[in-house]
Image 1 (tube, rainbow, N blue to C red):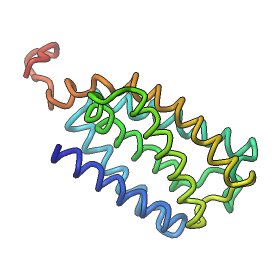
Image 2: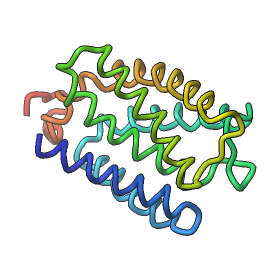
Image 3: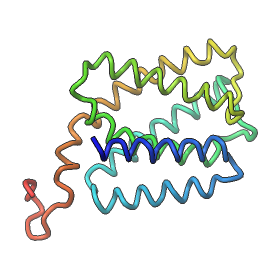
Image 4: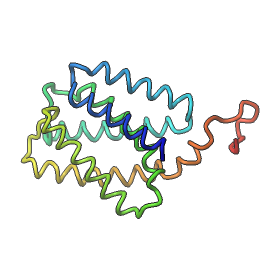
Length: 179
């Protein structure tokens, strides 16, 4: 539980830096995300591909939201800080989903969907994103999208505990999964 608390605090720090700093501090955000991904690649190499896949899906979803007119940014493309934030979120989810997997799936789905939608609403309130739709409509659509994304997160990361507990595979036997 101690590790999950640290991971949560680290993700929240990156989220705040990305949303409050936006383009002004985007390279600091990207630097922290890069360090986080490098650490993960060294400590948990088997999970890194899952993190990259989830981040790519999230980035694609935001591109769809941007080009469908759900929300907008000062530029016509997704900001670099938001792309970094997706990698940070996917990294966070790789720890969070296994940590809460003992809870009822509907609770996990609902809490993740609510948290995802509210994070965009908070970004809207901080001026990081602009809703092109009425705020309540945009938040409802985001809730539904995050509900669907939550299903994917559970599928991808539910069994990640075994990977995290292994730390590093043995150098002698690449199939030594009990170390």
